[in-house]
Image 1 (cartoon, each protein chain N blue to C red):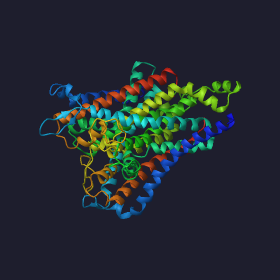
Image 2: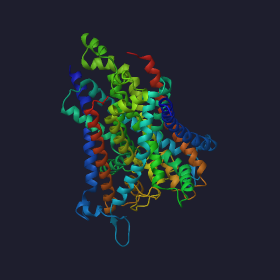
Image 3: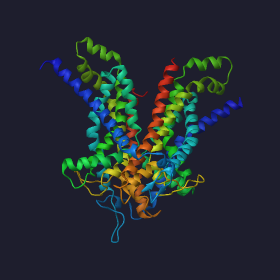
Image 4: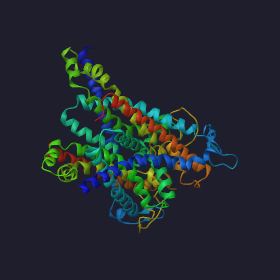
Length: 288
Length: 283
């Protein structure tokens, strides 16, 4: 019997590591960023300029980085949402069983293409294309990044939206058809509204994934920390800033702490998105 | 235009959207294979890089990525499987279990660069492992842990209740039941799910950027405290930091292809195994 108890304890402690890990992540991000609160103070982050290395005066304003992330994410959602929802409808309602068996693994395959490979593709193929198409000086723009991010968000959003569509009770569909509605009317006026909470949760998780994406945006968005809302301007996201600058910063400096603050902001945003999405899924009984 | 006709057009459009996505994925893969294959040969895989990556092969990067993968598996697989066993077999519906689940969901959503910062703060600096295979593997292990837990739990839950009841009724203890009547039947599901998660870790760049990766290090690692080159980071460096990025384009493509083959090979293998076992066990 002691062995049984010991095993239970072992499994319990393994499962507890997840809680422990979350706590550690928050603690260590805060630990590394904490001194910034005293000097130069948190207000320094709310600045329109990010000039972390300067002979005159350093600026640690994360606003241009936040708008950069927001612009790229927003643009990519503009593409992701219609494409993914229609894709999910196709896989769940229209595709033949054989087609479905092929399409689903294919979408999963897209999810496993490393982001650095997509970034590389963006750099050598997509960026020149954008440059010529719009007659720009450089193809490294917010739009280029957004298009790559769309490819990364699509698998997440399609798979979860499809789950949501599949979880709509069959009776809804039968009832709608019995009333004489066509298949399309049933899809758009009955099934999609019923699956909407799940689809919204899927989109939120997609947004979380896109905001946190690093390599692809680092490689193709041009990395200039200016505040702009133009899709064809180069921008710099929060993630790219951390990745690009952490290698050159001296540990413990204000710049180093500011980078950890960006990490904390990212962590907070994705955490909130995740929790809300999960709440929605549980509330509407769409958890698997 | 009749209703029938407009419906047909809508169907056509939806199908068009789906297949354009497929086409784009296909084109990306095709582009990398087409340009990568000519530069890919045995020497490229088995030789050390020369002249900061402008010539020679990528052996250290391949070895680096494989050793990171091995480290990740050693740490994350046992931890993930044990967590999944707890959640599927032992956990009661209480606040503690809810907390574990919330923690797993949170971990799954943490951006990879934030894992990099965390690994830098905890493993590299606080625990003083330095930028090393150890720090990188631990960081990647944290990142893939939620994927392994979720897919393993799903596999465990797929085993019918009757298997457990029969074993318990014969007087086996809970652990004996799990070991002999649950784990064997879910192992294939656990393994395939885990491979999918770990395959993704192989292609991750952001977490290893801050915890392991060496810019240019043309030798093999001797211990887990060594820095290594890694395939994704090498590709990033060649594509963006190399002074003559255009000249080494074929090498970039070949590196991308090797990385893609490694990651997609793992994922594809997992998907095929899964389809195979889905046919074998039906309950």
